[in-house]
Image (cartoon, rainbow, N blue to C red; front, side, top):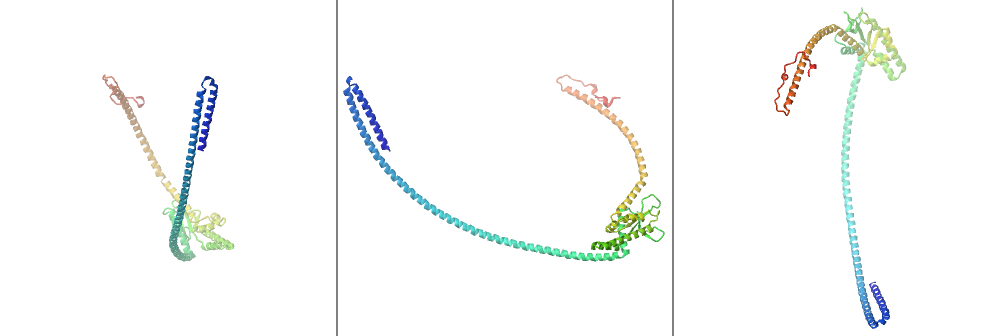
Length: 430
């Protein structure tokens, strides 16, 4: 491509020289009449020769350049082929080395994976052995604990069975005990006495008192809190009809309606009979109050009696006997105790009245003392106000000493405290 450029340059130069020669020839033909034709022809000949020389030199240079370019192209082609072959050899070497390295990496990875698999297998085996040992120990420990707990529960069951046997024996003893009417009455009497001792003050009741003209003795006679030389008493007798009550409980437990009705009727008849006996034997006004108390030792027995429609109200109305159980008896006794408290307060009313009269006299004397103290306090307040006034005068004089004047200031005689003036009050001094 450089040769073509050189030829084009040479051709353009030749054309330019031809154009210049043509112009010069035309100018020479026009100026022949001026006497310069010979000189211009020589100049043109020389220029043509120079042009031919330049053209030949350009052709020679172009040939030389073509030869040089061909040599350069050959050399460059050789070098490119050499570089291509070297690159191919290097790429082949790099591919071989990379293949070997990849094979080595694959082998190393396979070896590492095999080692990891073997290590994981060993660790899993060790973990399996440890877990198996721990599970075995835990199972053994749990089995030992469970067996120990079973043994303890079995021992507790045996102990409970022993206690049940002992309780059964005690229940049998209680049944034999309550089978005797006298013993059963003694148990109810002891329970009632415990309630009386717990609620009433000491000496407010008597035990086993004969109230009527006969030989009948009531279990307890409670003195009523009234003002009298011989206060009336409240008869209290305990009854425990266990036969009818047990028949009722057995009928209810077995679901026998007929037996339950018969047992309830028997219990009602027993309570009516005992209430009439108490009314006849123990209610004797004015030695006693107008009513008496029938005490049932258990709340269950009282509940069964209260369940019979109208029984308690009818007995209270006809026989003047109140039926009470362990839950209601303390309420009645607390009412009686409150009457004793009220009676004691009434006994002390006169003493309290004398005390209040003496207190009133003392309050009158105290009022006189307070009046004197008020007068003294008024005089003291007047003195304090006078002292405060004098203090304010002194303060004003001291502030005058701080003024810029250097002349001496004499104190006013009013600065001297002479005490309160006669007729002055605290409200009129400032």
